[in-house]
Image (tube, rainbow, N blue to C red):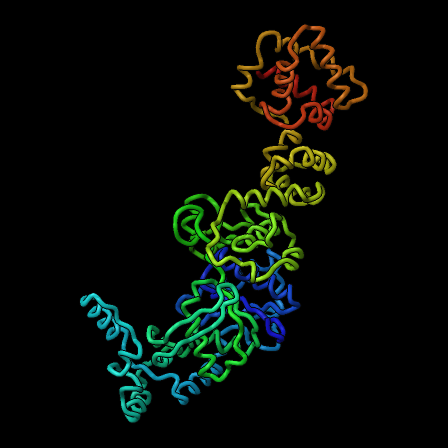
Length: 506
């Protein structure tokens, strides 16, 4: 750790919905910043205008907000080091591009896409690979092979060009990754990447280095797919004279698909029926993609799930609040290897967080579902019903299937249960049962059970057989929590009415 203030950034591109892997990157940045009393910055990297998608930036903000990650600086929040959107920083990048060219660290390249494609095809035919690098640059159309006058004329004529970084020859690049240790590269195998495009915008490579420097970013925590770009970024810091201000790097492991090889993709989610985005994505005229929020997951459960994909605190502890995660988190305990995503574990986390909520809290979440079902029930009844069944639920929506019979009488009866339980002396017993229950003065579960048990004994019937028929009458099938408690909560009048209805309709 350096002595400077911890400042980290999450820098997504607004090209569509935010993948759960990106959310985990944001979360690890957030946890690290808060652990060290630092700042969490949201920067929008929209230099690739061809892939820009309307609504994606708002989606990113909403997703992070839903998960409880408070942004300290960003496009919406403002801050001392803005603008926080790269498309609004063009002039800044241009000035540093000119500096790199003037200092001999970059050069103009006028090769057309067609010319480069032809070189790639030629190399492929020769079973080799074309690379724009120190070995080929002098034979191509750029300011290293052309005269100064030719370059000046091409630019004056408006000839399209890009600017490429001039990778030095046979130089060892060393850097420390906080997760992977020392990383070494030799420039002889690196190509001259484009750092400024013909559309007047920088590529990610230049933009992120310039922005991280200007925004005083102390740590760059990002996915391991950016590890191959690390030597270029290190060299850019050197070329711009910022070596002493270079942030520390940490490259996070991939989130792997549930089975097989490769990283988790939307296709994996579609195939197995689980979301890979934090909230639902509804592009105008495009395909709707499911989200964890709309699928019934609680934000705390999603945060907890993601925190343990590639990190652990060294104990067997699995349930962490956000505050506990902040206290426990460290990059030293992030794994190098990929973390396999388990959809069933995601459900397990959600169940844990659901049952840990108070019945009152769950009522607030369940109330819109009741309204949607046109159910107007007494709040006290709903809360009592929730307390009985919440251990059986994974999602709030599951509560309806577990409690609907508290609010509405059966309109049909499970045929299999009818065939098995509604036979012999049972129908006659059920016909007489309302009269027995009318005599119960103190309507509670124990009194109801006592009255029915006495009648069963008097008739010489099996307790289990009658109780299953009684359950069928009250709920329409062979499911539900304690039967006498159901009868107590729906009340004497409703209990008797349901028995009479079953006798008349089965």
